[in-house]
Length: 389
Ligand code: CAA
Image 1 (tube, protein in one colour):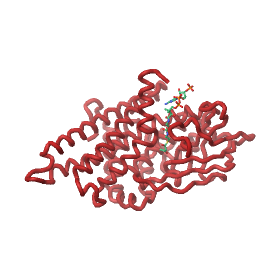
Image 2 (cartoon, helix red, strand yellow; image 1 turned 45 degrees about the vertical axis):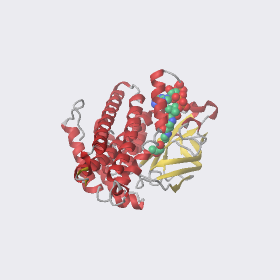
Image 3 (cartoon, protein in one colour; image 1 turned 180 degrees about the vertical axis):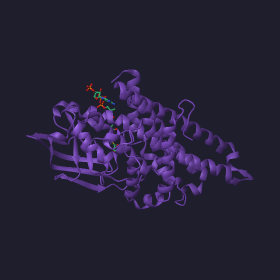
Image 4 (spheres, rainbow, N blue to C red; image 1 turned 60 degrees about the horizontal axis):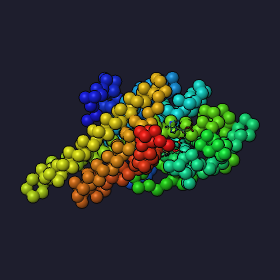
């Protein structure tokens, strides 16, 4: 179910939701467990998603995208994530952390060169902010970019880059003036084959195992000045603005995981019998189902609200950090909680690799961590509410 009385969907929205659902069930569902097990990147299905317009849903058609709105993006991402959270995060990062930032802050030439191949699914984009010693405190990064004539020379080590091992282009944040702290950070667009850039080892992960994550190592990597995104010193604001969009994507990925876990648990509760009745007839299980459903629908409301706030921002430039952080906080904690309950309702079968329930449980955890931990979301929300810094 992805329709609420408060947000009636247009025919176009229903069409993209149904197309994504159909694709996910036919093309992704049969391979999800196998790719989770092997940890292989699902190149073929991601390429097909690109051909269908899912890798740049909000990107205008002139730059290779589908030219739709944020609600369309959320609806499609929810359907993909419901079937496989790995495909979900690859799609989310491509759409919001990569394309959205360049569309918002890039020059015309940068949009043509760095967005078109990615939005049309011919190439993959990634976003690189985190470093081994700076995750939540992103403003303290150590990587340096030093201007040298018409180039910048990039040095440093970046970590936890989603799609790092497979991306063709990266948005990378580096310190250009350490004395200015966060105001000394600058953003760059870097092609994967630039000499001086190497990809580190692929991280072995608990969940979202079919998505590829790695370090990026920069050693005297020369990037032309025309690849700078925005002005020198604007990098931190660009990184934060882009993360607001990214957090709506991760909230949606979490919603998809929660829905999948819930639907499996609901079906099991009405079919599995114990002590002479379906286990859902026991309040201990029935009330879990009630709480799971209620939290999922509350997540959806927060996500659709954040999507609307982002649409508004496209017109008047208003910030939607509060809406995005509330959606991510609530939806990710809901996904973890719902997946936990789904395992419990299934008992031993929830723990078995014969069913996807244990995968939902493993996949849910990362949504409370990446693109800002739950603690960071609480910081953003509380600061916004109290006007304190
Ligand atoms: N939009 C625009 N500007 C923003 C902003 C936003 N959302 N958030 C902050 N800013 C601006 C502030 O207005 C301020 O501007 P001025 O200096 O002009 O006053 C400036 O940025 C600094 O803001 P703060 O003082 O609030 O900065 P802070 O150092 O206290 O940090 C924070 C704030 C919210 C904790 C931030 O550091 C943060 O979000 N940290 C988490 C980082 C994160 O999410 N990392 C995940 C990386 S991606 C990933 O997970 C991997 C992947 O590939 C998926």
